[in-house]
Length: 112
Ligand SMILES: Nc1ncnc2c1ncn2[C@@H]1O[C@H](COP(=O)(O)OP(=O)(O)OP(=O)(O)O)[C@@H](O)[C@H]1O
Ligand SMILES: [Mg+2]
Image (cartoon, rainbow, N blue to C red; front, side, top):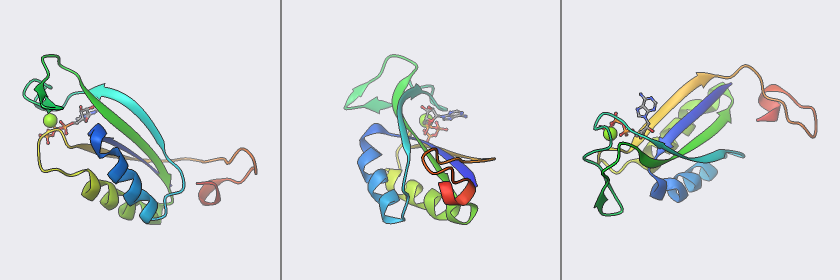
């Protein structure tokens, strides 16, 4: 299994969530975060105003998927979150050891 962690622009959250539903993702975690990339936040615009601080508001998505679904999910996020402008974000993919569905006790692919 893979854990796909994506940092995206907050206003793209609805589009990304819809795309993920379209490809059959059945669960995800969303967190409001702050961060910066190569421009260190300085030259980036947020809601029309240039931020004077280093950290810009972003949304972090975490989606656990079976290995064979990872590419599809990565593509769905990449397409939906892309504006072509700086600050569109990043996707980090890590190997996921185990998933346990608490209610049923299912594990592995059956639990994601
Ligand atoms: N190397 C990194 N490690 C952890 N988080 C990162 C890293 N790079 C970017 N991020 C997170 O992703 C957010 C968006 O990054 P961003 O898209 O600006 O990256 P970038 O490399 O500057 O690309 P671009 O030139 O398209 O802006 C950052 O605000 C930060 O939260
Ligand atoms: Mg950047």
